[in-house]
Every structure is written in C-alpha cells, then in structure tokens.
Amino acid sequence: MRAITQLKVEVDQLKTLLCSNVSSGRQEGSDASLSITENPTSKSFADLALDLKAAAATGPIFTAHAQKKKSNVKPVVGSSTANKRVTSVKTTRSVDIFVSRLQPDTSADSLIDCVQSMSGGIEVVNVECTQLKSKYE
Image (cartoon, rainbow, N blue to C red; front, side, top):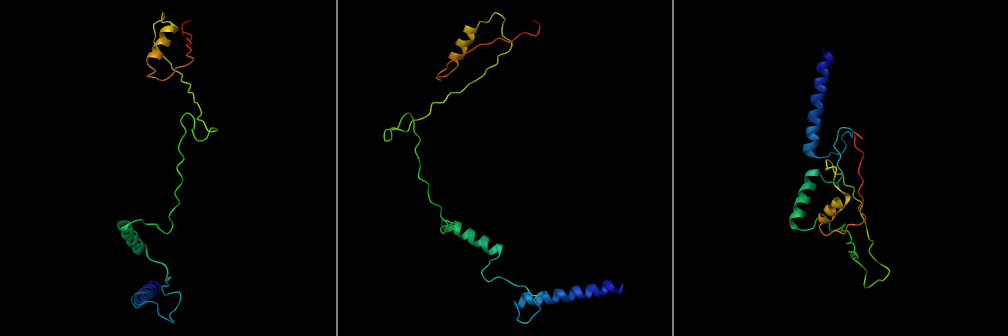
C-alpha cells in the first residue's frame, strides 16, 4: 500500500515539474530527461497545416519544388508529315461470340450477315462460324 501512495506522489511531482517546464520554456540547468526539447527549425503539425491552408488560398503551394513540365508528344494518326520514319501501328482485335439457342436450321451465312449488320462501321474481317456438338448427339 505504501508503494502505491509513493508512486502517486512521484507522478504528481513529475506532472508539476513538466507543467512548470512547459509554461516557462526550456530552462537551463534542468534535468535533461525531464525537460522538453524542441528543434528551433521544426514546426508543429498545426502550424504546418495553417501554412498549407494559407498557401493554398494565395496561390501555388510548392513553388520551390515545382516540377518541370513534360513536352507533350502528339500522337501520330496515320503517318507523320514531319518525320517519315514514324507511323502508327495498325491494331486488330479478335472477338469471340457465343450464341446459344439458335434454330438448328440457322446457316453460317445468316450469322455472318448479322455480325456485319451489327458492326456499326467497324471493319469486320475473317468471320468464322463453328457449330458446337449437341449434348444429345
């Protein structure tokens, strides 16, 4: 029981010592383990947040560390008029379409016509129709 009361007294002494150090600033000759040391060049997070808020309201925030702008490279469509070695690459896309529950007498030509009509202006090349085996065959 005495140890608990003694610890409470020591905690109260440390609280009063810390409060007096904080209110009076860093005192010379005080115990280094009990004093609060601050770096004079560092700011608190609250001060940095206020600075950031003020800088955002007035203009660019990071003017000291401004990034260099990249030169915009224009994409080549077709062939370049300035540089004859640069051309666009023709790309193709393979699309597989699965159609279920067709009539058994549906022909491949009617499916190809359907794909051509639904292409919407896209060039359709090499349409192949393959009929899967029936479960009952």
